[in-house]
Image 1 (cartoon, one colour):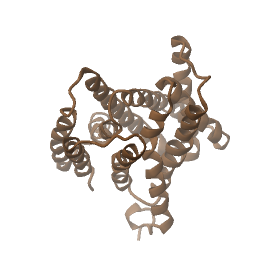
Image 2 (cartoon, one colour; image 1 turned 30 degrees about the horizontal axis):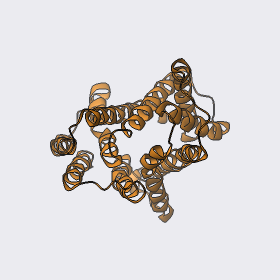
Image 3 (cartoon, helix red, strand yellow; image 1 turned 90 degrees about the horizontal axis):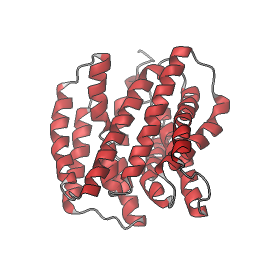
Length: 285
């Protein structure tokens, strides 16, 4: 038996617990961003990455110049992903924004085809055919200019997330998660800092509730969520973990309904279900 095969590894019960906690943590991101009243998306993204980088950086190890350049590029994509996604939440619902961002695996397939010459399988195109009508139905529930702008921001956020994963794919083959995680957050924070300064964005003076939401974003979705998924990758395939990630809109919608009173309409639920179902089909092994 090949011990290195992911599918042949025995999955300890604790991995399921870690994944469940990670899913809950990431699902809370939309509600926490909405709760960060008075904080600009740039400020939220800067603090989220800075806090995590500060906590994890002592464990990082030196890396080569080529990997450092790739990490820097991945950090820029991560920072831009946060900013566009956070900005979308100002105009559209948590469910709608999260569903559009979670279309990332579809963009990842196209990028891997373009950059790695890995032609998507038939299931990818079937999933795309299911997801696109779902997105159209979801967007059709509110066609106001503000909502369309929010849809665009969330979609771009999903593309940037896909680019972040594709770039990080090659780096993670050589760099451990204990080094990659803090360095990519450092790169993201450093790319955001000059923009924050140039635009005069306020990064201090927030009320206590806003600071609590920002710290919660760093310690929950970033530390527990992202690191929990990365931990599970030691025992499960990336496709399996990605499928779990696609449950995020469900958790985000339930939390938004409970804490923000955002109860989606029937058409939005159908559209979101089709969109996520299409992504699940596209990444099935």
